[in-house]
Image (cartoon, rainbow, N blue to C red; front, side, top):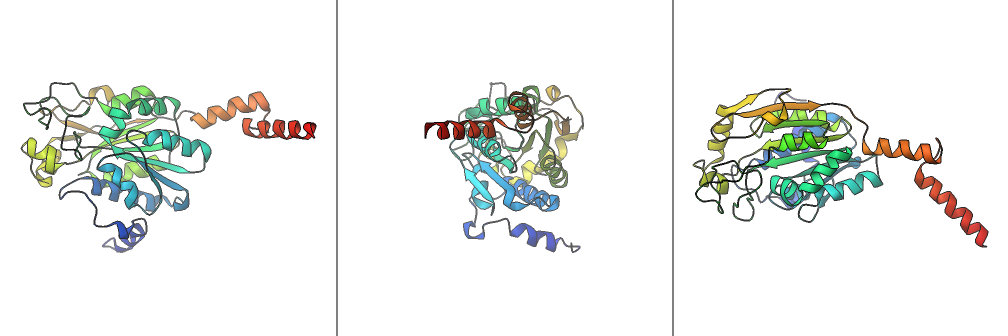
Length: 299
């Protein structure tokens, strides 16, 4: 790679659909930075791009699936993880990445999130958290911090938000991390690590939404929010996820919190099937043989 990074940039460009540009994201939005980190990490893994599939849901972040020159799927609201699960189980060789927002993954998609983590489905989740429903006008969401102002909480939020890393870890995720979109190198390294690891990997990325959330909270530009991240982020690798709540009057704890190895859903499925049908067969192969035998007898 050249000193200015031009060679890597050219490699990343092949993964972008230039015909879809310009993108819809506002000036100062952090989603583009997160997408850049993902593509940069992907280039460095040397994973076969033909085996990578990006799945996203509804919302600003969900548009990422349409901008990448990879097999991708822009699903219905909240259903990115179920679609991704189907892809992975139907073709275990795929590298499945869910790239979506907090409103899509944690609100309407919340049940899918906890059960995919519980099952340890082998996929990588990149959750861009901008604390509100940005595309639809900046409404209160399940991750909006206490006292933060939104279009539907103009005097301040009084609902306790989810601590997403704790939710993912408590549900069974084997890899849990959080960064802000300011921590581009660390985020890229984390995504790289997650792509090369088996199991349910969850990465929360706190990102600016200056147009809606920022204006409501005295941070009207992307630089204002990035400065806030710089001044208030504290790296604590190995921190207990239950202690990483986000408080507007406190510090944002970032880092890698969980990194363990457990059998994946597919590992356990294969173990049960081989026990039931023999070490050389899977359930699918056994069913096919049974169907073929039944068909021959009926002739």
